[in-house]
Length: 165
Picture 1 (tube, rainbow, N blue to C red):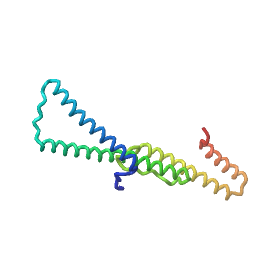
Picture 2 (picture 1 turned 90 degrees about the vertical axis):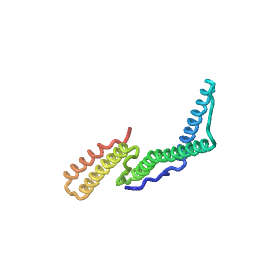
Picture 3 (picture 1 turned 135 degrees about the horizontal axis):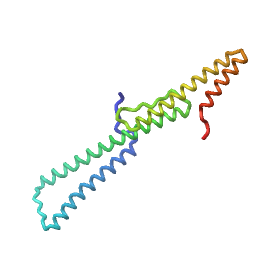
Picture 4 (picture 1 turned 30 degrees about the horizontal axis):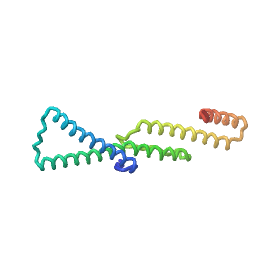
């Protein structure tokens, strides 16, 4: 099992983490402001906090925000990492490397999609191997009737591959 990297696509992940943290800051502060406004509406606004209380609240808020920032980075790595892995392996397929296989970790997003792509690549790899074996048989065959039969089988394999929309 490979070690999960926290940063897979640094800029995207930092943007997501900062946005998540900013939303949390706004939510916390809106909660404080709205409870203060509600208290003012009732004519009750008595805060009996010492400076240690304010300090503790500040430390708690900073710790919460740091936790949210870290969790946002982790969450994005479970999406961004698999997308990059899928793109990398599809690029290999594009260049004719049918041996490539998408390997994702348990808990990553897009596991089912990667499995479907891997199955499609395997089916394509198997078909190419069968056609390669047929070509070798045709090249080695001297009997004209047998060559026609093998060519017909090869054409049937090729007909099974849709090349236009």
